[in-house]
Length: 200
Image (cartoon, rainbow, N blue to C red; front, side):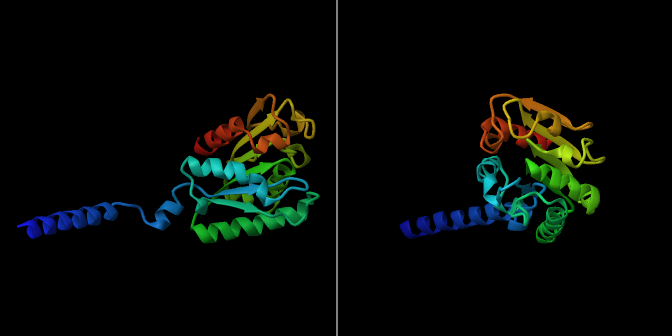
């Protein structure tokens, strides 16, 4: 009798697991739930600059398969070199994920390089949203690219990139206070604004 009862319990558990796993998304589905995010660093920066932001987004539901950081070839922000690298990187992300477009989050000169890619290297058809953090946007253009939801987050306490260089006509311009230029990369306030911009 005990043996039959034990068998029934095991059988019920196996049936539960079968039903439960059947309704779980596959790895492919989970990997493409959110539009892939490409992070673009600024002058003298590196892909590791976005560790804090990536960790935050993972805690908010993004998977590691949706977050990509590029290592730019020119640490001095050379527009042609870096925009070409962004072009190739975005194409690779789209191939890997099967997505139609990416979102870009760019810091400092990365904003100008990303805008150059969008304007001159076909990025206008491959980018859904652009978020710049203390972006040196005006070095490329002070007009948000048409058809791309653009958010510019910048700080009155940024003494490296002037707010006037970050602001863009046609963008959602967000001025914050008390956060330095580098601090834009590790601020809970900025993280929440990034998440909001990506989810709009």
